[in-house]
Image (cartoon, rainbow, N blue to C red; front, side, top):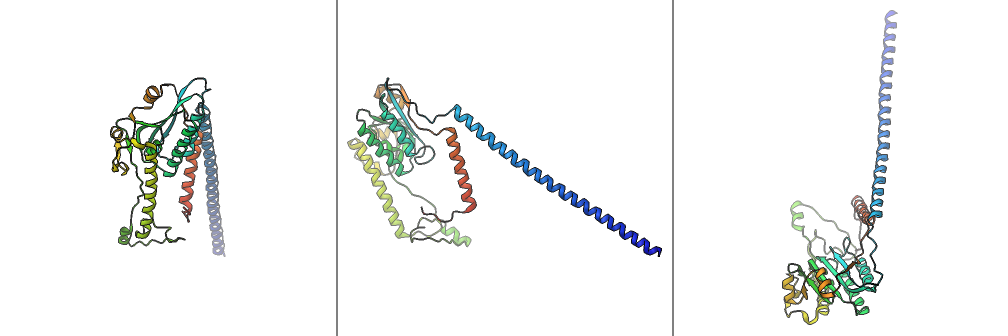
Amino acid sequence: MQDKWQESSSEAQDNLDSNRAWDLVDALAKGALLEQQRSRRWGIFFKLLTFGWLFFSVAVIYNATNINDVVISDGSSEHTALVEIDGQIGGGDVNADVVVSGLRSAFEDPGTKAVILRINSPGGSPVQSGYIYDEILRLRELHKDTPLYAVIMDIGASGGYYIAAAADEIYADKASLVGSIGVISSGFGFVGAMEKLGVTRRTYTSGENKAFLDPFQSVDREAAVEWQASLDTIHQQFIDAVKTGRGDRLADRSDIFSGMVWSGEQAKTLGLIDGLGSAGYVAREVVGEEDIVDYTFRLSPLEKFARDFGAGVSATLVEALGDGFQLM
């Protein structure tokens, strides 16, 4: 009887110890969960605080250094107007609409004696280059008493030179890179590498030529011929624009339109430019008005931040969701 009582007492003690252990485990689990929730809340709080501080800082910079507005003279004194193209055309800050807005403001100011278009660009979109070119011709026709001079800095090639060709005269430094009158479309081919790796490409399109530039598929000869015809057409448009702008100043050499790039000194010999000099030289010696007013439309720091932030978010979403299908 006593033995049974001892066994019962021992079982009760074991149950009690087991319950205590489970209570301890439960308490620890709840404590860890509570700590995790607190950590998450603090994490969210600090992230919000960081974003708030960031936007506040950008707002302060925006108010202190807002350069979005162009300085417009009151027309009481003459000056040389300046508009800049700095970078790849169609990318970043060099947008055709922005450049054209600056040019229109420069021409429309009654105090503008001449306009200098300072170019430092390797080229870019032929569409946007053509848009700026056509607008320059239109503005020159509307304001016949206001000449426009293009000044090439380090480089004025491809689309950069396309635009410069619309000017009354073009100037550059003797070491500037000028020309590249041509069109390019390039890529890579990975068909052989995929065969060696045993990788199969699966592409679904609507339209038999939709994927003819896919680097993971063999070249479609017929589509390649059509694509080359398109490039040749755009090249001819470029050539026609240069001939219209430069006229009989161009040397009689077929390699001018070969896509070659020349130094400023060589470009002067070829008739691609009219003289050697900087924007300051043109304003002082050619225009005769050293007072330069900058009409270049630029994004404010806040606008730049919003653009870059939006681009980053878009890239992240594309990476996360996948490309899907495109109609481009």
